[in-house]
Length: 149
Image (cartoon, rainbow, N blue to C red; front, side):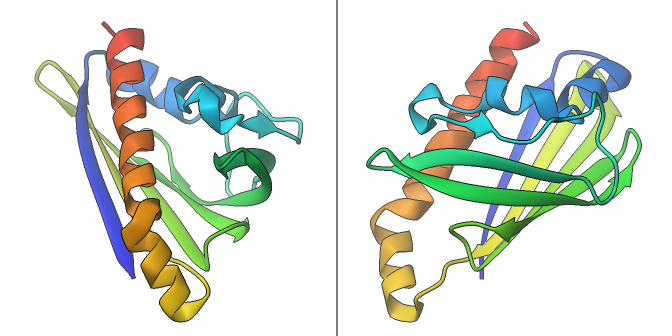
């Protein structure tokens, strides 16, 4: 299993930060345009445990893939977890943690994932998947800096 961890100081208060990141409608705002992210299901203003989100994304060569995510756990203002139910990963478990600190909110993302296809999946991870995930989170970092400047 692979793991990607990212921390970011978001220069706002905890409620504003939580409200932004816990709204499924804002996911497209912090996803690179080149991924052609499109939500397919109607979304509520705030998430809840059991919420299913279906969307299309084109992460490789513009080829569209279906992805369904379930919101597994929500602790208001503290953390939430989403897991892939259908998509390109064998396992995708994404934890989003929020902590009020001096100067804003420390936001921590922890993504634990595995790829299908055994050796070919490991090769794809080495060749491009890891780099692509890092680029997505780097884009997200810059976008959040811009939004909460």
